Each structure stands twice: as structure tokens, then as C-alpha cells.
Image 1 (tube, rainbow, N blue to C red):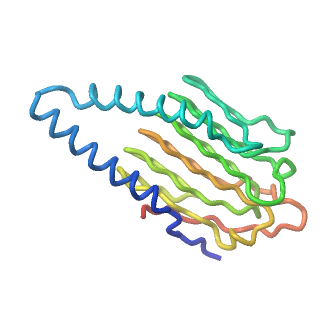
Image 2 (image 1 turned 60 degrees about the vertical axis):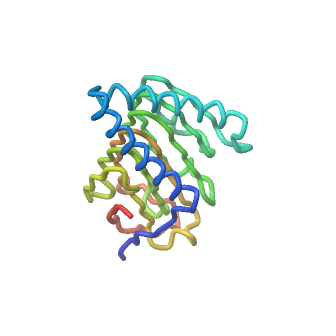
Image 3 (image 1 turned 180 degrees about the vertical axis):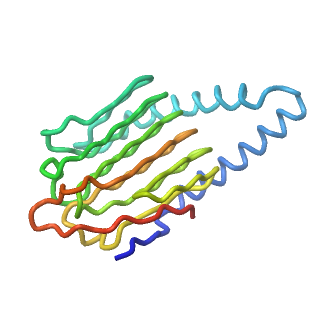
Length: 204
């Protein structure tokens, strides 16, 4: 059974992508005119935008969701604890989401990750639906064995039968640089769950 690549990007995110492309273009032009390093402009502006977004989101976090902030370091989910929705803000961090079958509740579990440079490793049990949306200036993604590199283009992926899956995981990531890996844990299917095949991650 093949997985499908969908277009789940709502109108608001399309605006975000357009603004990002325009912003990068303006920065390149400004760098050429002023003879300054593009990196020295982008990094401070991105950090300012990230901090402003964090302040805004602190007052708008969804009820029941876990809100976590890590400027620099590693972040790992602890096994043996029921998993709630997460909103994670990082500066530079390795994020390891190792999801055990018994920790996932029925329905959809959502991870929203915002950061500057992130190494995201998502491991999901067999039979669990997976939906991925990731946007970065540079994204290096390996989803179920399929390699994809993208520049300022979102990577979107959804397994077959995602909407009907009893347990499913949705990952949304927004960063400057993202290294994303998504894989199955062999032999980890929950009782009564049929295994699903892996698939490809493609840019929209």
C-alpha cells in the first residue's frame, strides 16, 4: 500500500511561505547593495522573529498541550508516560520523539516544533498514521527511507488511511535549518493494528 502526498497547507501558511521568499529576496538585495554578509543579517532577524513568535504563542497555547522551551540542548520524550499534544520551541537542539505503542492515545497527537536549527528524529510504531508538514530555509529529510532536500519549500507527507487511523501522529515543524528523520519501529505494532508501509516525502 502506497502512502500519499497531500496538500494540507492552509491559506495562512501559503502567505507565510510567500512572505519568507520575499524577505529572503530583499535581504539578498540589501546584502549586495551594502556589501555586507547575508548571514549576519538573516540570523539576527530570524532570532528576533522567533522570540516575538514565542511571546505571542505563550498567550495562545492550546488547552491540554505541553509547552516546552529549550534554547540549546537535547529534548527527548520519556517512555512510559501517556503522550499529550506538544508545542516545542528551540534555538539549536536535537529533538528525539520516540513513541512507544502504549503511550499513544486513540485519536490524533500533534507535535508543533519551532526553532532555528533542529535535528528532529521521529520514531513511530507500526500501524500508527503519520502526517508531516515541515518548512525551513534548508530541509534535509529522510522519511521512511526516502531522502529529500528542500530549500524554502514545504515537505508534506501523509500515510494512507491517516484520517481513519485509530492512533495517528501529526508533526508540524518550522525552522531555519531542519534535519528531519521519520521511521518505523519494527515489531512495535499495537494489538489489533495492521502494519502500514513506509513512503516518500515530497515538496509541494
